Image (cartoon, rainbow, N blue to C red; front, top):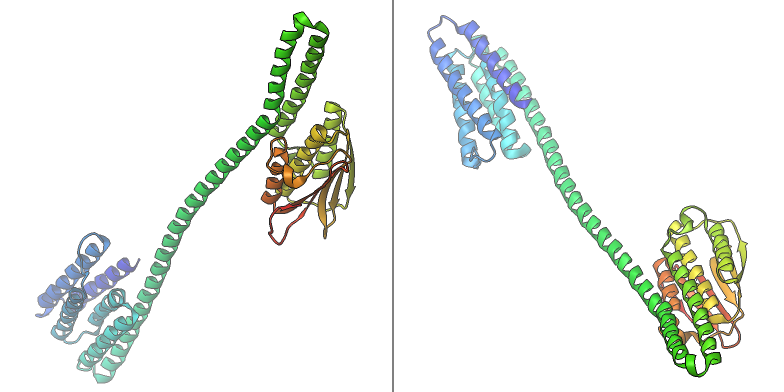
Length: 396
């Protein structure tokens, strides 16, 4: 639009010149100056559109262009007996001055254009007063177009900055997407390692015991059949235990029921599943009606699931109590049994108690804190509470 406006101003001046000066002796000379002005104007805009070409990129070349164009306009004014409309050719030059050098230097150049126009038009045939008025008028138009050029520059600078920021945001988005994929991969790898530890800690040891019992039964089959039968019963018990352990691990691989129901309903379903699987009795006590974020609810469900598995495997009792408090000021989860108990500090990290390490990890992932209170012969109490301070997730 800016280029079209400059071309229209130039075309209007050429048409006006042809009407006013046609048939006069100075007409060919003025037209020659206007043609030169137009060629420079078209050439400058043509090179400007091709930013890869070295068009007017140096200040000296830009200054030379403006001086040459100014000389052509002044020459046309003088040859035409100071026809004031030719001063309109300073308008495109004013716009280009601000575009070349910015507002401060550009306005200084426009001020020089205005001084030249006023001094030149003072000597017009219509009188000094008319020449002064037209000079001031054209000066105002030049400053107006210079201000327009400055606003265009600001808009272009803002657009360029927005484009840079957009590209930076795209780069950051791609980086974040890569980090998200890495975190997801690490989470999958972490879960895979946890399940591998669980398999090694439970099913693998059970299968190893089944193998020893089978070998013992094979050796006693001919010599002491009654003892061999005892070993076969032992194998049957171990097989049932391995089946329960595999079912427990498989249930952890299934989508968490939190996705379809809230945490209290999911815990009720978990209690029913344990009773159906191994006859364990799970009492559920719920207080409050608050809600938890889905990630926190899933983490608490997983901790409750692992704790009940440990009750079935290690406590020696078939009964546990799960307490869930959903009060806004004090949310917590508690799993308690009255079994044989254990020493938490000695058990953490030892074979047979990898589930405890998994519960501590899950508590830390959701920003909660897990406490274990247990003594031999006095049962076990696991308490999971919010941890706003960000301290370690394990308390014993």
